[in-house]
Amino acid sequence: MVAGRVQYRALVAKVDSFAHNVTESQSPWLACDVGCSGCCQNRRSAFAVENAEIRAYLDLQSIGLRTRLSARLTTQAVRNGERCIFLNESDQCDVYPVRPIICRTHGPAVKLPDGELAWCALNFEDMTNDEVVASVPSNSILDIDLINQMLAIINQQFLTTSGGEPYSPLESILDRSDA
Image (cartoon, rainbow, N blue to C red; front, side, top):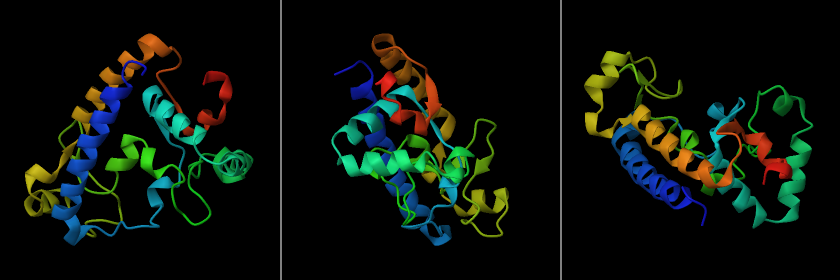
């Protein structure tokens, strides 16, 4: 196993566990649900270690999926960065089990590096930052800067043995020249 991949999977497990608790704690204010794809309506990028996990997943999937993804590359919405390459026609993520951490943490309230909170516009409808802080238990707010710092360290470990770009658009995963 390439350096960093085991640590990345451990981080994903921790993020998923915490995200589950966050979703339960913030559920009265969350509108996000299966099929909600508002956060997927733009170009996403991911760390190299995340892209490697997605690439490995795709290698195990049917050729039909790779064909559909390649076809999506030609659509204007994907080319213009208006739709994630992995968002299918049913507004479901084709790589959901291995989606990047940013996708795993989007929606509920998260703490940004400046201390402010951010969340999907569909959630906490008409609430101010102060109202969200007063309503949501502080132990259910993910510190996104801390996660990104850990992810950057893991990504650096990964790059020491794999090389490549530290961060790239998700659609670059279909370019097998960097596999």
